[in-house]
Length: 376
Image 1 (cartoon, rainbow, N blue to C red):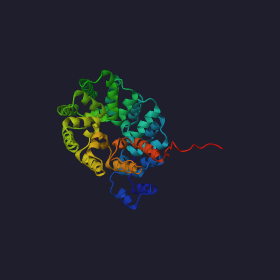
Image 2: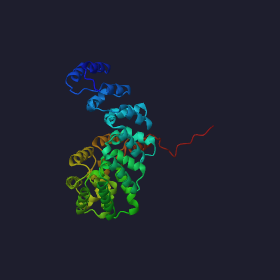
Image 3: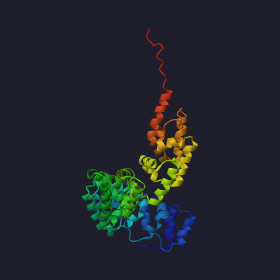
Image 4: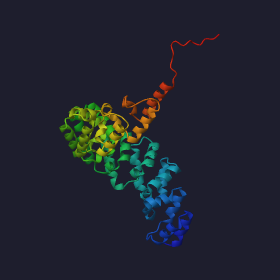
């Protein structure tokens, strides 16, 4: 039972080294007091009580709670004390789940996890996906069975459940409708049925929330780009390269971006389509972001023609571009007169290109007429 004696809360506050101001608020202004037994249990598990209070303090005033049962389940699947403390700090609502509910979730997740280690990793990163309402259990089970009929492997399904749990909590029919729309679109644009499974896996892995989007958005985006002159094959290319384009964008945002890009590149519609196909991410950026990146490149002495030849340089932030240009110049490479390809890529890609330039400058030049050293 909850103890409503003020001094008991104050004694615990002293143990937790709460500031006098917070102590005063806790003891005088909270009508429903924290459960001291819960506080002690979490404290003994090395849970940061102050973090729980700050983010989800309401959990500490709930009843009934199942701290011991939650900890036992986590230990049973192989979670160590550090992981348990991290899970309860990030998602203290876990202690509100009934034991039978947690057991059902454990069985459900083990059907898509290869082993306990994989399950622990998911619970640690996505505790809210594991400790969920029991009312969604039937929908979760039905959705798992449906995705298995698509021949998606366990790893894909478990990752999808973890990163987009809402899509598994809703009726399976809604997911079926979106998946069927995606499959039909892929085939209608000329996609090969043998490649559709791989494409769908990549789409769901990289953009799991696509299932929660309206299918009409995909049709609207495709219709807009088709009216701008993109062929079915080119749309399939965009669909495969820019997976978020499926529903994340909208015709109006793309119209503004394309209009601004055409003005900056000073190009025709045909040339603009070529640039977009070379750099599909161009469709994502808003006009202010593109303006800032164009300005940064032009102020560094880069020409519009160079950007046209290597539009993927616009995927880099202005700060990254400026840093890389300065670093290349320190070793004698002038981006204003050379290719911008050296600027592209990840940090690792750039370091490799930069390293080659540095070696080229530091390596001694071979003199073919210099006498060879020989032993006396």
